[in-house]
Image (cartoon, rainbow, N blue to C red):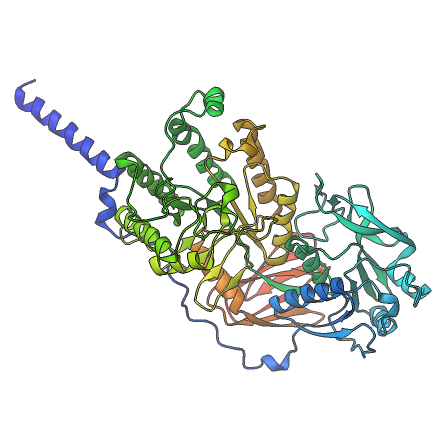
Length: 610
């Protein structure tokens, strides 16, 4: 080969090397703007002109104004009904109230039903075809008004005696969507329940690990009575049980759901720890950086394909403990390139990049419990803002034109000052995603909500590679309340003290079992990134609707939504076909209805059709 040919080959190899290095790093990021999902300002369906012609589903609530637990139970019922856009009236239990037969459900948010002035009227309403719910453990020894024979008969009670603590919960029926046959134990679901013996025709839907009935339904005349045999719980994870009880009020019960599943990866992309971690090296023979690149990340990518997930990764710039400026990038080119490469791969698979922090020091002054986590408190909001402005400079350089819309606070701790600092440095942020529930007093807990400042609270419900029983129960509870799955992990979770007794292989098995079970039980949830979920949540919060029920069909009218809205429909009847919507079975006697327009009809199969 002549010299000219050798030079050409050398030049070609050199150019290819530069091309792939340019592609691998951040060169092509500057050739075109990268943008995630657009803002949610969208044209919505106009209100239905004839909405007033159809009444909302209406419920009556009876409560005990002298009992704190009953007042709390009343609040929970009212909150859930308002969330579902349903009407209700609340009355003290000693008030006698006329109960129209078209009432969708009568709810006793008290265990002192023996003194309820409207109990007899409620049971007559049930016998004529209505549904009565008892949401509190019944007080069997009420000397002022003991149970009558009619009450026992309606409840399907053969005997009832004093209460005792119970643990664990299992579901023999499909009363809650996705949980039939499941058991959640390991000390989960502690409550006080009466010792009861039920009539042969009462159906137990929920029981303790020891077999104590915690919830059952009983046919009474042409209607039904549903009783919860437990104390009012102050955690959010019991809302799913209440949502299921409401979903069994009457035939053809309908309520809106969001219908999405989210998966967050905290501290990713971020600088990769250098060196070896003994536990991982002994099991895999890989350094930490090699483990992330050759093992962890390919496995996470396969999980996304296998279980139909879309990841939202939360960027960390550095792991220093600096809380006073000037703030500058640390770690050199290698750390920066690492964030670019992993971030590009995440975006390529349909994921989203969000924000976690300049460093992992929670944006909070002293007094937020950071000391227990060995975090350094911030002296001022100005310092927090300056650090977030450095993060803004850093990510805009790495991902020019990309609109970052999601923020997750480090260790789920965020002060009002920290919230303001994020808003100032990142005006495009619309989502704050912390924790839904828990026991840590310093954590930032949220409900799902759309706020007046234009931001959304979209908390995470579950966490970890091998979620325990309480965590899994929280997942299914929220699915029944809102139709939402929201989980998060950390890349370095196997290094934590909590994981000391588990190998990486065991953590992988735990995650795969959890995701496999969830995917099989709830395949109807749509995988989205955090910002992609905004239109679904926005429509859910803004939605209004009416339901018209006839012997032949169910008619659904919806407005104030710009995209597709979802409803869960529970009916013992068999769906024949739908017009103006789609309807797919998601559990026994439960359909997911998807409606993009203003109205739909769902026709029931008749004997002639059969």
